Length: 602
Image (cartoon, rainbow, N blue to C red; front, side, top):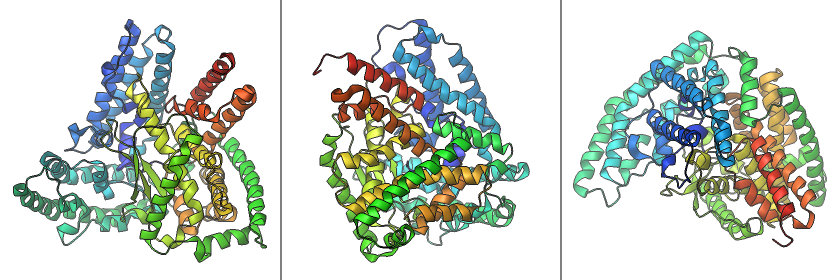
């Protein structure tokens, strides 16, 4: 999965428009043929919305490598939120006024993707997600995490960070105001998740400013920052932390524990939110980019769980395990031979697996992206409450590589057999290939190069796990069991997400269903279930996207016969950039038709 965006709940909800729409660079810079009036207006709209997105979401700008707004946070006042929502509606009206028929085929695709995202952004406004700006996985309580994205290459970079630090108390006040409004409206997160947050807030309350996570950038300086300026920068940082940041977090912690937490909801289901059934139907459709109902998704999940269990039984027999599948799961969770003893050993092993994958990529791809990637540890302050790993895309301008983040917290619950499938998904050829190839697409608007639809992106990541077989990387049966475990993980999601949010399942029932059908450790399972509770519908996209890509692969292989080349198919899936699944299917159908018509041997 992708790196949890810092302040994600607040920023994404307040922006209304998803990053797929706002993540655009000025289209005028692209080489384009002579344009008619409709095309000119379309690209002007792309440019205007890019600038608005960067201006209104400084964190998004930082994420994209745009340094212009690195000295500020998103304005989370209700007036600013309303202004952004109004601007989204105006942008949609402007898009609909453009004559789509006058556009080229490629620009029609750009238009359709842009409008789809805007329509969804406007539709979701009524659910007021911005009233839930804090989750157990991210929010104002770990705002310092954005430093992972910042360059800190010049004195100005440090001055910009100091300005952001100075502005943090206002951002905290705005967050509190939204949370109070959420309480009044009955629009709050589940308490079982919010009980994780006080410890995260407490981690910001330090006696020594030099121990604050906000101070970390000041512990080292590049050569470009003169020695004569470093002590002053450090002194100012310590003062801001001591006099502004720590007091603000101390007050926020008191507010959270005494006023907010007792008033959060005791239920976990999305349907218990205001207009909850409509909300869950919306997010399920939004994340999967389909019209599937919750019941249909639940049934797909049950079918996949049964199929994968049968494959797991075969592995159990192959390795000579004599007990039941449940006992095999327990063996995989607990035998010391499946675990590293220290975080350092675990990290070294992740690096080694990445190096093992790299030379095998040519077996499944003709096109290898130019952007490099690296492996990093998930920061200690969020590791206990987050997932096993995630991916952070590189900067659009190539100044920051992509990074595969791995969780080193409690290595005794991070089994070796999951590491290959996990690395294939999060790094290469999964998310890194998907994002890097998208960024390198020629002559398309930038929002198409860096856009992100979960069903496509996570569907590709899960499909990439399967490619380990095509690349000869699952030579150990336990690694193959790991791939099945990860496939099962995403199948289980279809059942438990719909179960909890639309069918009345309890959290405990979801945890036990997960444990009964997967060898993942309880630590991971509990974190996963809590993630589904806090992010309804998002986890549905993985398996739905994977099934569609696999379906298209089988279709292409059947229709092309001897002309089918797996490397060409995989390249064709990635060459669209991130799109809704219907658009991907239309593209692959056209690719199949073109291959059928091509001269033999072409």
